[in-house]
Length: 274
Image (cartoon, rainbow, N blue to C red; front, side):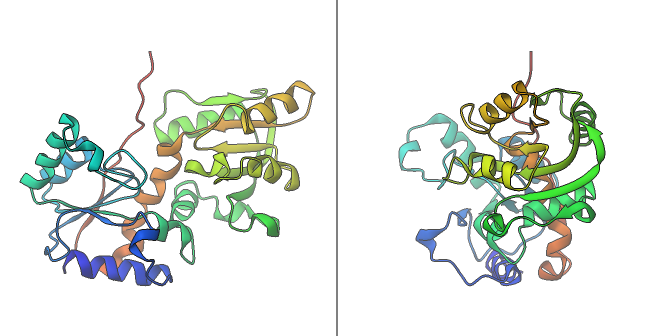
C-alpha cells in the first residue's frame, strides 16, 4: 500500500468528508504520497528520538498527532536557516521517512480517537456519564469508583510513568465525578470559560487536564477549594493526556492497512524534573 492509500483509508474510516487542505493541519509533512509503506509507527509527536526508533525498526511512515516543525501548522518558512530544522530534516530525508499528521480527523470523526484511546487504556468507558448538551463535543465526564485525589495521582503516575503530577485542591478530597479535557481542551478550545462551566454544570469533583493557563481553571478550582468546596484538578500535560490515543490507533487501523505492521512508539513526557 502507498502512503496515499493509507491516508485515504483512515480518513474514510473517520466518517468525515475530506477537509480542504488550507483548513486542516492534517498534511503530509515529509515524504511522498506514492511511497510504498513497509512498516508504520504511531506516536504523539515525531521527535528526533521517535524518528530514530522508527528507522531502527525499518518503518518508513510515521503517523503523528502533533507537529513535527514546532508550530501548529508545521510551517517551515521561518526555519530555513535554523540548524535544528536542517539537521532533523536531513535525518528524515536520508531514510526516506514519510510523516503524516492525523489530528483534526482524529478529533472530529464519528468518535474522538484520543478519548477512545484514553478509555481503552484506563478501562473508563464503563464509567462514562452524559455530558450536558452544551458540552456534547467538549471533553468527557465519568462517574468513577470513589477515591481520593492523592490516590488518583498515584494511579496515573504508575500507569503513565510520570514522576510528578501537578494538582490544585486538597490531596485527600473525595473524587467520584471526574471530567477529562485532554491536550488543549483544558484551555477551553478558544473559549476560556468552558472548563469552568463544564465543572459547574456537570457537578464535577475533579478535572483531569492536559494544558493549563494559571488564571483560568486552576484559579477557579483554587478559589473553590479555599472556600471549602470539594473541587480539585490534576494536570497530566498535553503529551501524557493524548499519547494513549496514538497507542491504541494501531488496533483501529487494522482493517485499513491490510497486514502492514503498526508499531506504537511513546514520545515520552517532554520534561525532566530536578
